[in-house]
Length: 140
Image 1: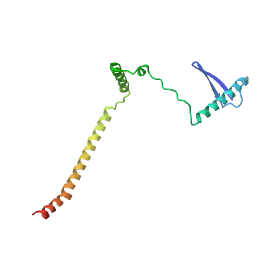
Image 2: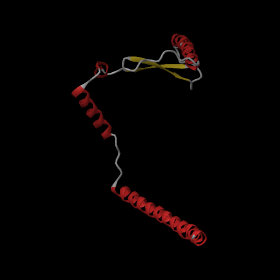
Image 3: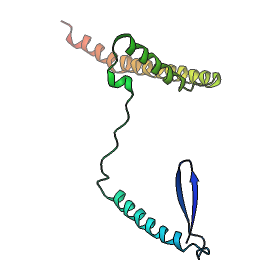
């Protein structure tokens, strides 16, 4: 197994290349180091696989929040956050707005006509004859 060192910023990371079957010449020291680190990695993998992951890091709070802003400063902070959230909005284009408006108008018209039809059926077919029967049979 070949071990290649790669620097990224201040930290140096070790990348293990499993594709080669034999270690390169002069890599005996790095091979031993890789075995030690491999054991350390397997122990950390076992630790993360347990049910108790350990203490979670505390989220870093802003200094303004820890002071507990009040009054005008709190209002200004609120407006800044509103502005940030407003920039995240994705507005639909004109074509989509027109299409959805027509869809809503058609559905509202359909539901209104449906309710009107139910009202007419109940009023004229069910309750109309019932009221007529009551007038005929209950009159003095």
